[in-house]
Image: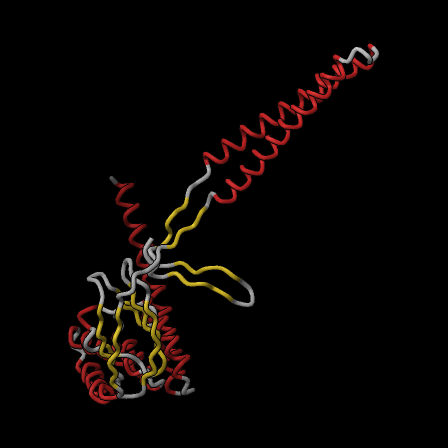
Length: 296
């Protein structure tokens, strides 16, 4: 019992030390972010510091508020609004009236600047829409807040061809975007056993060639052996060639055919790797191939 109590105490001490270290690092990153934001006026670098800090202390209301500030300076109003809302909620929960009021004021100031996408989606029930890789909740299709700039919208559903669209949004702009997934996708297959079967056919053909050679060779040598016009030495030489060369080539031929059959029969068949919802060729200066993603 004493040992267990001591072990628990050590574990608790280590956990506390780890938490203290994380908090110290979060505080350090926050201070660096504040200097970048207020003194050096480098909002982009400040956002990076605050993003790193919030990962270490996810409840830090001050960090949330400053993330909203630096993204507002960068003109990323949707991202800024997200952090101000989180800061406002956290401040209200912790009764931090000053932080809550600051977040509320900034939210009021920038909400009219946020571009809005209204998605009109036509497709199966399992349709998935992603904007810049982030999944959109179907309940938000009528109002999707996005940062100004260029965005990639991807729609996909099982058995339907993937739809990719690009949209450019300006400050305070509202756009309606129709996404229709009605075209049936062509399933994508790969044949992992094609190489083995090709090798099996080559090996089997070589084996058959060896057996054919054995047949012709054996016939010629047998005729030589049975020819009464040949001397005894010539007959014995023909017999030895048939025995050693013919037999060896025959064994090799049979083995090659057997190995070819085994390789062919055990080769993997065609395998469906995608339902076609997210399959695209990749052609660059460095590679030629295919990009496969989606439902497997």
